[in-house]
Length: 283
Ligand SMILES: Nc1ncnc2c1ncn2[C@@H]1O[C@H](COP(=O)(O)OP(=O)(O)OP(=O)(O)O)[C@@H](O)[C@H]1O
Picture (cartoon, rainbow, N blue to C red):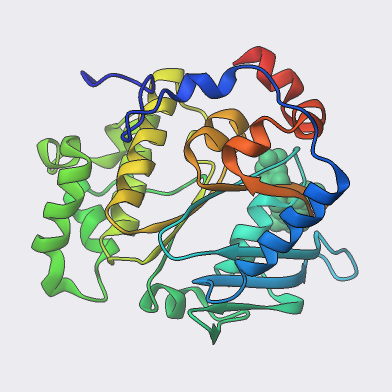
């Protein structure tokens, strides 16, 4: 990786500045205004989830009234403590977990509990955290699996993916199982992008990667987003996630605890105290 890692974002803004001092806490009026601003995002949202209740085991709700909005072109991060329901929210949006109440829409169309294959056809891509490549297949074959519904578009889509991840072109005939964790993550993202999604759901794309590769993944996410793909990203690496996303949601016990612009959340003392405190010191 010869490119600079993370010091400067593509708009030329210094991302590390966001690590600096915490601003004054919002007043109740400002908080109410923030809530109102959030509700405005529901109108015309590309992905809209209202009051979602979902869970795995009968009688146990993991999501307990969760609202989530993604506007066209946004990169939105979801952070929160372990077990908050972040991955569950992503899986629920992708139809992998039945919705007990509430609704999900995509461009206004009701997709609540729609099966994953239908969502892929509608332009939703999903990259799970684990087991996200076919290790015995080559990189090119993994990409073919990604585009199996539209095989004629393989070349055009693979060119697009290789533009974002040149390594996937260089190693196209190598087995995915021989790749490092970071490289596999590229394969997984590349495969999801083969279907030309308008929305990409990423479950902890930086998990288990070295710090350099984590930065690389975040930079790639920004680039993918800059090509017009809206992104919903669940991340453990909360500060990095908030640094690169347009907006963030802090999930706690299956509900939205906070939501705001990424950098505003990073500078909200309550968010820092409750969710970023130890991470803030560690990163
Ligand atoms: N397949 C499953 N069956 C039953 N319970 C599950 C399953 N997967 C997750 N859970 C439970 O759902 C809750 C939320 O898990 P989830 O993975 O959504 O949390 P998370 O916020 O993504 O946390 P983490 O950052 O630790 O991955 C946890 O209590 C977890 O034990």
